[in-house]
Amino acid sequence: MPLKVSEILESELYTKENLVTLLNASLEDSELIFAKAAEIKEKFVGSKVFFRGLIELSNICSKNCYYCGIRRGNKSPVRYIVSEPEVLEAAHYALDNGFGSMVMQSGERIDKRFIGYVEALLKKIKILSGGRLGITLSMGEQTEETYRRWFEAGAHRYLLRIETSNRELYYKIHPQDARHNYDQRLEALALLRKVGYNVGSGVMIGLPFQTSEDLAEDLLFFKEQDIDMAGMGPYIEHADTPLFKFRDLLIPKEERLLLSLKMVALLRITMKDVNIAATTAMQTLAKDGREKALRAGANIIMPNLTPLKYREGYLLYENKPGTNEQVEDSIRNLENQIHAAGCLVGYGEWGDSKHFAKRKYDSKV
Image (cartoon, rainbow, N blue to C red; front, top):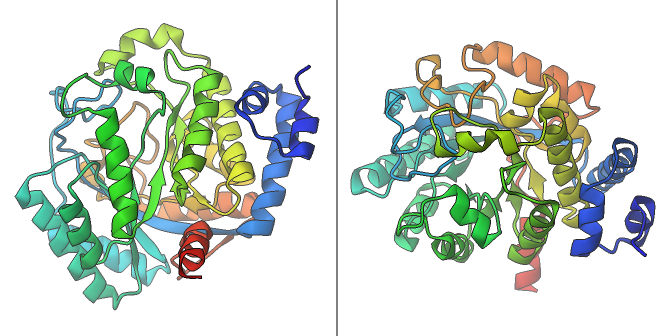
């Protein structure tokens, strides 16, 4: 006979079957999951939330993923790349306002010009900040040489989302060609670990065709990959993508948000000391979505430092919040959300994954 939610949480037997039970928990039972995650978060990572100032560096992408608004095949966005002075100005702002870190995110490009541009930016940010700003990259699959160049230039964290660990579902949301290869994605994660990054991954939650079993497998995948950090959130449709035609298969937005919060909580419960982002997509479904994610176990927030003139061009999904919000207003709102969730802002700290630090220490012992 299947265990009840309370019994699973007490026994800490997080098998696939039990994870499915937890993911399908009622609203009332979900509160037990969130309470457990909050307890573990406080014990293993504490109440601090770390800012990562986000620069959406470019919406030029070589990929053609079926869910993404900046996919190569979408002719609607005006393509851009943020200039070096604008990036360095954002870095100055992050430093002056007590952010410990920045994130540079972009569409996937593997051309020499782009790789060199990112490398030069990393070096200049390190010089500008005297090495005080930590830097996370999220720029997709690259060669080991590129990952190493960027690492040596100053990046030390890298987020590469798998989007789904189910191979069959992966090819329902990506084209089946050489540029969208599941095994290549896995190899890229291994290369990042080899080079020495804090390695992050993540999935979309509530995709068409996705099941609770798929999400349970995603949680087990994160554990198997021994990730250091995660960025995941609800799938939100975009009209200019092939996946939009399957929108009738989607669960209601309220359920998608609840499911996303349960994924955050269960990742905190099963991988106690990793970093977990409260993503912007959560806020898209509810004004207090990121606050709820913090209560459910998240400990990272990424204020958007991208110049306003570019933000409409980086719509991975529709109704993305903050596209017209001034940075100062955004930070003030985020601080209020963090405090409302009973947390503190870890100003001036990198806030690296404690999971990464422990694994690195264990490897030396």
